[in-house]
Image 1 (cartoon, rainbow, N blue to C red):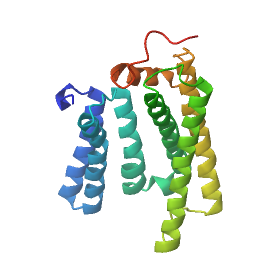
Image 2: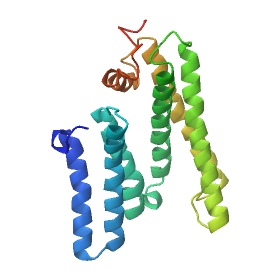
Image 3: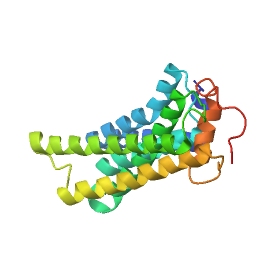
Length: 217
């Protein structure tokens, strides 16, 4: 694992803001906000340690995106109540998570083929990535419904409209991630989020050892 002092300055600044926020909250007696800030910081740093545990190299853009997403959903969303103050906050986070799961789904499926782009047609791998991301989003909506029904929470906000809006956004985000994977396999590595896929594959050649040379155009 790369040492913290060798991490990207932007990443260290983001982590530093969360740490400073927790210290200030503790100093003024805002215990709940302090706990949320520390929890957010721990979750933001978790991918770095998990990647080290499984000998995976996570490129800095992935870590920055993860930090921004977790901070937006937990710290900004809960501590500062952005879910209620900003009407599009929940939809934006659902879309971002769907894009992330689309990329993760593609990287996972591509890893199963050991980086062999000829093992299956690019459209097939992209489709499987899309299905995985949509499935994860759907399971989350089922979880929200279960929490509201069993514990009387209000995770679904406006009910059916909130759920359907989330599912639509999840589908769009999953499509963006899957199409980015398709472009990567076709050698169009400058379109959408394909550059980030290339960074991850290049940094983890042990997982994608059959991905040799440039991909076809």
